[in-house]
Length: 119
Length: 278
Image (tube, rainbow over all chains, first blue to last red; front, side, top):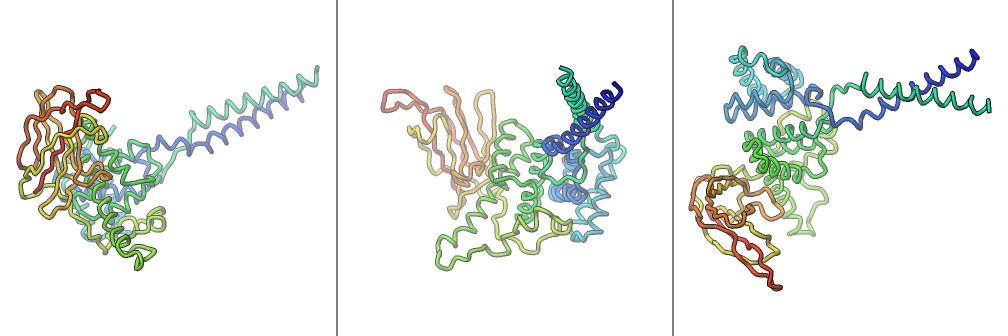
């Protein structure tokens, strides 16, 4: 009788292991749920650069802040600073860094207003 | 009988375990992705990413960089993805500036592609099997698995692409206004073609259309397969429209769907064709 219980529990354990494996391995199919906040740091930095390029042209800070929401960070200034650090480390052009710094300066001037950011 | 029961309880245990494992791995402890590449984003975030590429392009005019960024999304046809999103967003009344930027980028991509192809077609004997390096960023090699420097550094080479033609200086003049009864062209459409003074089709030209109690905007270049200077608008029956180019020019009044009769005697709404030249 005890042997039957052991075999039963082993079967459950084997099934559970298979279920976990299937669930985690099939996860790539669920990538439809992936958000921009999960982008790799170089891609996030490029997103910041795109926003900075647009801001450099139109000087529309409201639009830039709205676009930064895409990255779902509570502090927009933080992600811009992170992108600048990344850019300095990986050799972004001076012109690109300048655009990001200009955006950072503008966003920091509004920090009390934008600090609450994204939930 | 005992033998069958034996195998059944094992099967029951296996299925029970499988269910527990699936619930745990899919709901209680699902895989958390980090360090994603843009092609793995949800569709809505991909749209946002594409829109950011377009607004950055509108600001910088750097088509090489825009193309490299678009390649990260791994759309099977980037140009169609841009044009479709521009039309979708315009129809939804969503982010008009971004929609316009998307349309312009789509049109410029198509135009650059046409520019690249033109010499190959004209002189097939001298055609090189690969396009010039300066205009071929080799997406498969350099963009699909970008290192930070490859992704973001400013390419020295610049494509001799047309600059976005967002606010032409000279006003547009109506060269042709014609009602056409040809079901092949469409039904109940206002079709607009816009050219510059040199006879080049102009993408990204904003057109404002008004009717009693309403206004809408549309752009040339969102259907590049029909021409970069092409735009169309679907008229409602028995509504009178007026239309003008947003940046200035001659307005067109009293546009309503022409009444046409097909060969079989069936009535259908015709098409207005309007041609503007700068």
